[in-house]
Amino acid sequence: MSLDVRLRTRLSPRFRLDVAFTAAPGTTIVFGASGSGKTTLLRSVAGLAATDEGRIAINDRVLLDVGARINVPPPGRRVGLVFQHLALFPHLTIAENIAYGLPRQPATKRDAQTTAIATSFGIAHLLAHRPAAVSGGERQRVGLARALVTDPEVLLLDEPLSALDHDTQSRIIADLRTWNERRRVPILYVTHSQREAFALGERVLLLRDGTIVADGTPDKVLNAPSHESVAQLAGFENLLDAVVIERRPDAGVMIVRLTGTATDLETPLTSFDAGDRIRVAIRAGDILIATERPHGLSARNVVPATIGGLARQGATVRLEASIGVPVEVHVTPTASADLDLRPHGNVWLVIKTHSCHPVSAV
Amino acid sequence: MDWTAIGLSVRLAAIVSGILLVIGLPIAYWLTFARSRWRFLFESIVALPLVLPPTVLGFYVLLALGSRSPIGRAWERWTGHGLAFTFEALVIASVLYSLPFAVQPIAASFAQIDRTLLEASATLGVGPLRTFLRVVLPLSLDGVLAGMVLTFAHTIGEFGVVLMVGGNLPGVTRTVSIAIYDDVQAFNFAAAHRTALLLLVFSFAALASVYAMMRKPWAVAPLS
Image 1 (cartoon, chains in turn brown, yellow):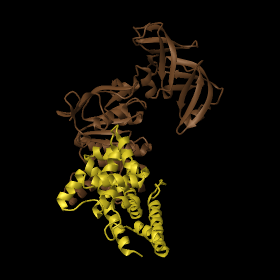
Image 2: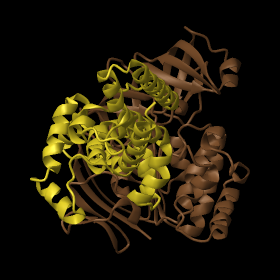
Image 3: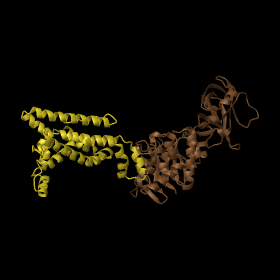
Image 4: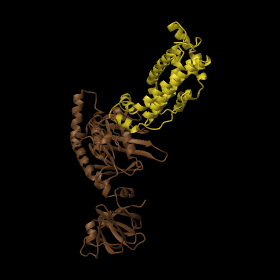
């Protein structure tokens, strides 16, 4: 089973969705900021949004071909969609919700199918309840079960886990993986959570302003940004303005100077030329802190810094350090306590060359 | 108390409510969900009886059903007698006159339904008719019930249209409001009072039950 999508739709005078891709069986993550067109893409595949131009097909089965005036209505598409807010039927029980899309067949057969999928999603004990009476995580499972029980040929998930805690997310992701190991249908999974992208995705499509700007494995797309929007989306807390000073092709590196400082950083060699204004993307968690200048270290970038402030956020201590420009650093609470980090203290920031990602400034 | 008139009014109101349930649901559905640019015109037509003097509506219905009109002639060929001043004419006129009282509460409750529920139903392979029966209708029962109660109460109390279209034939078109009018004309205030009080109590009970049924405050058009 594979899903072939080519779409071009003007949604407003300034916004246009223009995408073309083929999704193989397995999970394809659709990653992007809000307003990038993710939800519209899913709605178009499901047949809920109008399309100006394009073609959508599952294998040889054409769902939409604007040129040939084919437009299969949503009920005939066999495309499962789990809505961000689930859209469970409030007047029906969990059992009736799950069985809703099953074709007309003897009640015993329906009940058996409903119970089977409810059991595999751990919600069999809730079948007699209504949606309002169960928890958020359980509702999410009902939404998934309701879509999966109809055996869709393509599954579309619109941020289905965004409202849940990490433990519940992980368990549902595991359930979903198990389900699709047997079915092997293409799943388009919309999210803006890196965690979900890495946990689920075999491939990431990065959507920006309605077009696909990057396509590859989660590691490739989310760890090696070539464009600033990618870096912002992928959670690079630091985007530092810089100018390329020198290229050293033999060493595979280049030296950049942070704008407004005398600080030079070594980064991997890219296609930028000396003199180019760029940005350096650095994850806050990729920066080490030392209270004394370290020796005998492989890391090339050792920069003196002053701590501006510290704030604890869950299991992370967020540190604002200044190296002429502000830099965000994440350390663990124990590390922060061991090093006795305080505001106004002087420290050294240690950054590996390959943790500095040069991205285009525009 | 004129039990014949009361019985006639109840029979008329029951039939009109039944007919408006059948035709009100699809009209309300279309008004709520259609994307036609001409929807505002149909909304206006449906709401027209709310503002039109009953005599105007009654006058045009009388012309439309009279023996010179195509409808009146067809009816005469089919049944052997004229349509004007009959119970059937009363039913037709009352259906038109009570249309907004049935359609508007139903459409209001349709409009409150979360559209993603309908989209969810569609992506689960269920077509529009079954979606209507399994999602839309169950979630708007309060509006449908309110529409029926209002239609019934409004039909019981109507006067002008009945007078224009039905005349005043005891047992055929002499409804309860006309009976009150006749009693007053004949200075029979005691009888008029009894019937009027009954209508007052009934109308209040009907409105109270509608407000109790609607989960959200909803403006009820005045009963005429």
